[in-house]
Image (cartoon, rainbow, N blue to C red; front, side, top):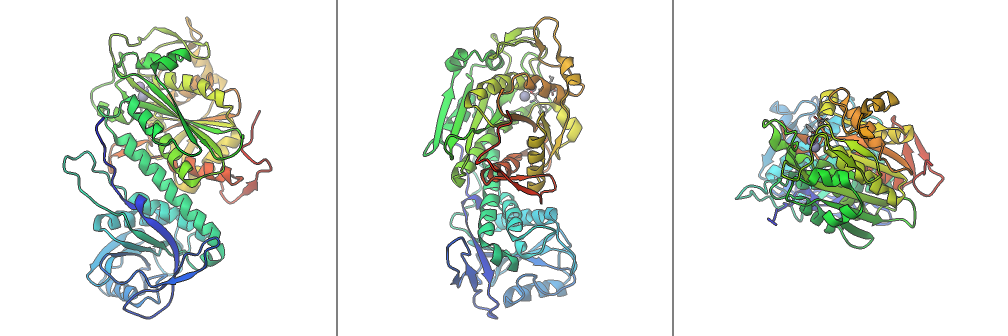
Length: 552
Ligand code: BES
Ligand code: MN
Ligand code: ZN
């Protein structure tokens, strides 16, 4: 197995909430820091004005001062110098100033005095700042963006949104170059300035910081894994990554070819039959709460999807190494859930397989008896994801899930329907739909609900077998979900997330996005705290049960 090297970006940094003390001094900036649950406020003399400090400073277009850092002479001086030279960035844009005395100063345009910031702009500025800081390097980073009022968001929410975008913005991966560029951020300390309302919300600010940081981490870890090319990442590689999570409160069970045969997962096996690289289904079980029913996440992990005998066109086929984005997201989310010690039970299934033609591969017209006994009539070997997921979903039932969510780059039709902005959500449970939509809005990792209905299910009626594998192109995200519905666990609720359009970018910053890791992590952290949100986000209902609701 070739070693892939993952580099240190802001995932390796330490974070601290801090308040600036208005000391007029050019020598060093004083912070009151460590505002946390029981930690007493301490006064620190760091960071100093040194070249390895990066300042993320909000500035208004019509003001000469650095918002939120007014009393800090050196930085305010820089902001007004920028203003006098016409260098103040427009709202939503940044300008990077490199100063010998003051280090890297990232001026962030927040518009005119009195103009409010919105969550999208806060995230965009933080992301751009993360990118700038990552390019220039830093030991200490002071992020004053969360100190700026932003719509309805309180200090904790501003910190969550800004920290997530800042950390994600610092992402870089050059591990597939023969001479990788090295950017070592280990040892970096990030000071987050929450604004005055943060003083009253110290505990919430801490969890906002942790939530934002871990959401970014989940997405970035998912991006790393999903980026591993098909000649390196075979199904067994995914299983090894799953095994690496084993530890306290975490067990990992791996089903290879033999075990999948014993489980009669013939749909899963059929997809992988053309490949010399055997399939592996890895189950990562995290036990964070007694014997509560778990949330089960099921990720499509097609290490490469050539289409099989129903071969895909050559153009763009290289991108099908990203057909394991679902399983990669499950891995990243499990990693963060484990690190956060969430008081909840979660099982992550990573469904590794490869879909290529070969002497033993499955064919259009084959009738395959699935794990649950249904006979599926194969129409197109390129509709492989649903064959793998179907057997994995019936397998998931053995965990008696309260909620099952599958995540898959499932249909090209979802890209046509929703483009690259929103993930397709299909579920027969309105409550789960609402919770996932809310988590999507909250994190900016949005989903749009598509229908499920008997009217679509009937398009899968088969002449020969029990059910057709595919109903062709019309409404393909929906008919694919209807296919999966035949196999969903009989207990608890179920939702299907089609990330064909959101899982990776073909343009701009190319490669996997790590979506919908932030959405899933937000949903799971809320659940672990007994919070249910509706899509307006503000409405919070406390659960009376200790754990997830069983809809049965
Ligand atoms: N992995 C693909 C879906 C896909 C296509 C994701 C393009 C991202 C970009 C999936 O396995 C597939 O091939 N789906 C087919 C199904 C069809 C044959 C019924 C599709 O959507 O074209
Ligand atoms: Mn396919
Ligand atoms: Zn596929």
